[in-house]
Length: 127
Image 1 (cartoon, helix red, strand yellow):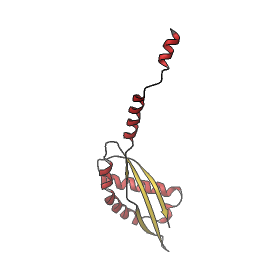
Image 2 (tube, rainbow, N blue to C red):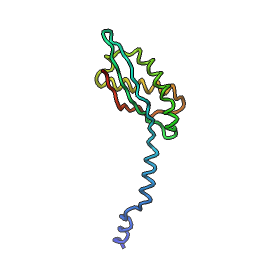
Image 3 (tube, rainbow, N blue to C red):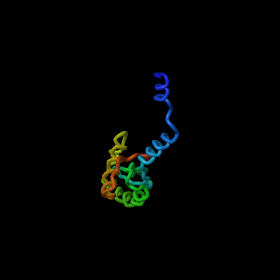
Image 4 (tube, helix red, strand yellow):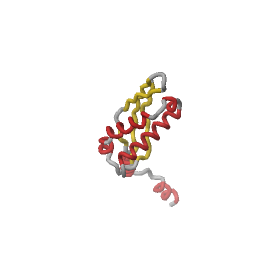
């Protein structure tokens, strides 16, 4: 009896149960890609070009297509933020943190009630 009971406890789950979990995990990720942003920064002596591509990790309730439609507005607002930025602030690891914070603040203002979980930097190149 113990062997039979153990066999039922250790019986592998059905494929249906695995599919439901997989669907749940897929709906939990909600990414909205913003257009590539190119900024010209001045460090006093010369001009630097900064190219940034980011993805917003949104709450599951926010429609990604709607968020992506706000992309040009967010990029325009980021241009104003980057005008006040010194290229020295973007060197090293701190540059990615600076960009993430700036995009998070700007996008939160533009998107209003839609919540952003985090900003993911895909590309950050300064020339």
